[in-house]
Image (cartoon, rainbow, N blue to C red; front, top):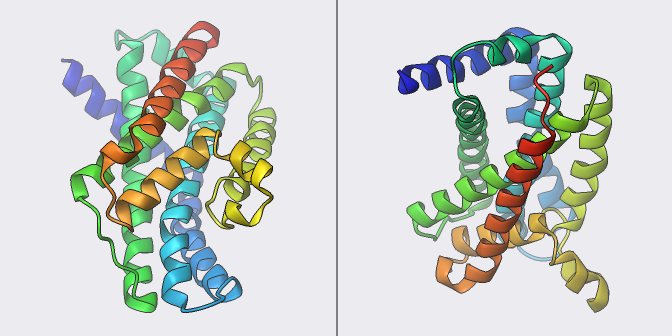
Length: 246
């Protein structure tokens, strides 16, 4: 019964997404590729393969941030505004099933984005994925769960879709450019870059880049993975205490 609820709710997320923002599916898949091509040429100071090798995991990481803050936070605020959350609350489905379906729903979209970016990076710029596929998947799952939990806080606190959009924008855009996604933070003064490495977004993106492109082992980044787990648990606890269904 729980599995059936989970599958039905996951399908409902996709149906809602396509019906409400079908055109956004195109842009969510096309814009990362546009950024990859644009920044690969704009930021290239040597071989484009090296620049693209930095950008592919960085842009995928930025999409994980966006998926949590915009894809989940704004979505929950919209659901509440349209009284859809109240309908979910009145069903016999446990809340954890609803949120687990959100994670899987966002993971599916992220997987499509990642496959397209890796394909374009490989065919156009010669980028190679050298890491263990299972370790790469593990980092992506942890990152997605972390930022979905943090995005849920936005959905819990924002009263309207507009306010959720504003909060998501304030968080996503600066973090994407200050977390080693598009611009190497080593170019900042040491004091600034050291501070930026304390951000969960930087820790996720750098770990994902090291594991996927450089072929590093997860054991080398256990401290950052532990920090991501702590952020995930903290986000889950805060959102559970503040989340409103109506």
